[in-house]
Length: 200
Image (cartoon, rainbow, N blue to C red; front, side, top):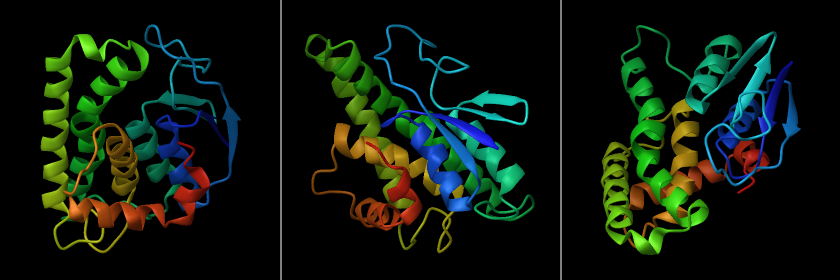
């Protein structure tokens, strides 16, 4: 059985959400989140969130864990098969969600919540907000005419992106823009698996 090291508001929500969507039995090991002073200082096997243990395998990185679980337990669900025309876009969105869209949000999180020096570096925070809005605009265009990132079908890419967008909404703000994203998030937040997993 998969053991997921979990703390509210962290990327471990992505993994819990995926496990709930797939109905994969798992054990939730709750760990108190510590405001980081350096990397890898959480009380998990790899010092960070999320981490899973599964049949002798211990891995971190939410995107890697999502791919691992879909490959091992998905049985063809929540990801287009290799060779499908949607496989490339699927992989793009899985990795865009963390590598591109979350990166500037992470800068804001670090300096606002942890280092608490955002007021002393306004140009850096403004630059991060600008990059975040650029990424949001890309997602907004990508969702045009679609219910989910790949079209009508929900996939694990939506799990990766959903967490990023929920974080961006609270830390960057959507103002009056991004109507496609707003409708998309409403669909995601209506899913029982996310409702069972989201502890923000």
